[in-house]
Amino acid sequence: MYCGLYETTITPSLGMRIPGDFLPSVGQKVDDDLYVKAAYFDDGRNAFLILAFDTVGIMRPTVLKIRAAAARACGLDPQSVMVCCTHDHSGGPANEFPPMNPEEPEYISLLLSRCGLAAGMAKEKRQPVLIGYGLGQEEKVSFNRRYWFKDGKIHTWPGFDNPDRLAVEGGIDPDVAVIRIDDLHGNPVGVISNFACHVTAHIQHGDSEAFSADYPGQIAQVIKQQLGPNVVSLFLTGACGNVTQVDWEERIFTRGQIFGDSHHKTMGRILAFDILRAREFAIPAPVDCLKTASSVLPLECRIPNEQAYDQAKAYLSEHPVGSAVSRDEHVEEFYAVSAVQLYEGQPTLPAELQVLLLGDIAIAAFPGEMFCELGMELKKSLPQKLLISTLSNGDVGYIPTEQAMMNGGYEGKIGFTSCAGIHSGQQMIDESARLIRQLAALT
Image (cartoon, rainbow, N blue to C red):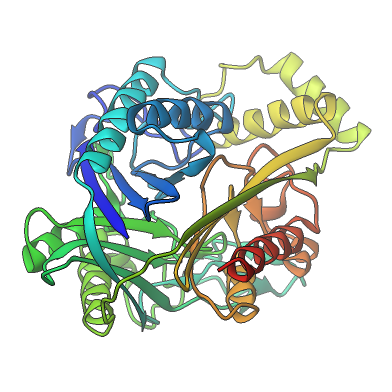
């Protein structure tokens, strides 16, 4: 197996927007740089490229442009390129959920240029490598954000001292999965890591809106300090649709710590040393098999009913797009625009699933914010050592379990950020498992 890794900055210019919230934000400073990181694998028969961006998400049309640019740079079929995002809520304007987050053409041009550079350099730097897999556990930095309340309903973001809060709906996925990549002399070349938690620990303060790679950026800094400045740390965000860094019951972290200006550093250090520990137990060995597959599922698209559609049109006639000022007004505008466009739009939602097999290590990519229970179900169903990459090759929004969808909460409310059908999660993990088993049978 040959592998080459490369990283280059994609930090936006000051004054560009920071997507990730309903209320528009503008980057006024840079706390730490954003990156696109490339990992190029080649077994002499097949080749594959992973491009990981420090951004909240990239929509399908832009994914296709990035794939084409990267494929040209390193001579690959575009289908052999995985475009994934860390889901960084302090990143640049690469995703487009109208009307709140239109992508900025100048920034998309930067991404296309830098992804071509990263792809070409990763291929150029390829060398024979040894690969190992390690698995650690971290149960103290991620927390489920959905709670049952006394009204018999599920509420997201329950508040710290809410007397109506009863019990948390679900759990977390504590797995810290690591792919260790060394050269033939045992020198570290790169680390691919995987953990399931929203990348929202870098909290914005007042008027000082700042770009940051959040805790994956801090992980990379610690890994470079420990393994060497040229070692590339590529982070894949796991199934975290219902999991964030906020400890609502303050069992481990106080609200002051969580909403302080350094919690992303705390998380980054904790996870970095989890990753480094797992890496030491990942015995590197030759791997001579690389296989890939993908398929596009036509997911059912949930659309508003006629009454919701009429109400949305009436709201927009009284409150034209662009007139929102407060956060609540931006939320109303977003869901009204969503309702109109979804009602008048397509009945299906294309979702690309992609898998990569490196020996007995599998990476499964999903284009949305999958709930952690679905990710854990997929892991239990397969013998492979599995990493799950969400927000990959597009973004179809939240993918809750069927039960969570019926229970309600923010993640199931129909809008651009949540319109996949109730059975979509199960369909996606079933198809991903099928693809992995199919590839494993060919080895």
